[in-house]
Amino acid sequence: MVVDLLLIGLAVTLFPLPVMAFVLVLASPGGVRKGVAFILAWLACLVAVIGIVVLITGGQPPAPRSAPSRAAQVASVVIGLGLIGYAEYRRRRVHRGAADRAASEKAPRKASSPDGISLRYAAILPLLLQPWGMVSAAAVTVVHADLSDTGNVVALVVFCLVATSTLLVMELWMVFSPERAHHILTGLHDWLTRHKEPAIFALCLLLGLWLVSHGLYELTA
Image 1 (tube, rainbow, N blue to C red):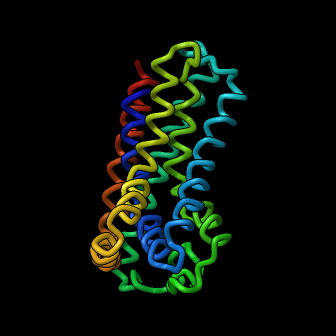
Image 2 (image 1 turned 30 degrees about the vertical axis):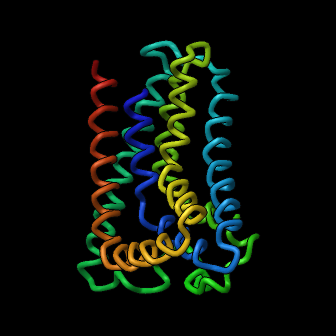
Image 3 (image 1 turned 180 degrees about the horizontal axis):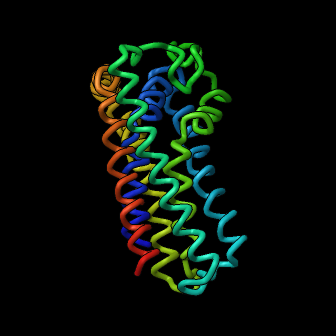
């Protein structure tokens, strides 16, 4: 479980679309304050998903090879296949020359203008930009968490921190070195604009392959 959560957390934090949106949030007037709202809403999504799963399981993992355990493993394989399919969709989309269409992004059009991002909108963006497929994979993994084990509780906290780490680093950088951070983050946004499709493809494909292979191994073990 710990390895799965760590890999999923890394994929979530490196997913380009929320990173690009967060750079625009930080670049807007009052960006640091809006960045805090973005991060809190982002964390709230992760905590809410984990909390729902824990409420369902009661903090106790299902018995090995039981129906709930098998169902969670099958769900992991299905989500993995979905991520692989989405990676292929993005690859074909680029191949068709449609990668740069504005309508393809989850964020509404006004997010492209830093001046148009309000505090409320900054708090709503994480709901739109959260890579829910990856978060769903984390939710399925949390089914196996035993909250009576301190190590599992720590793993859940670490997952939330890892999945938010890129945003936290950018926020702190903007607080302590705003001019340098603004210059570099603008360059990062421009770089991601050109390379986001290969990054999305790689992250979804690799995580999808891991989930499928690991899920099938657990099902046949």
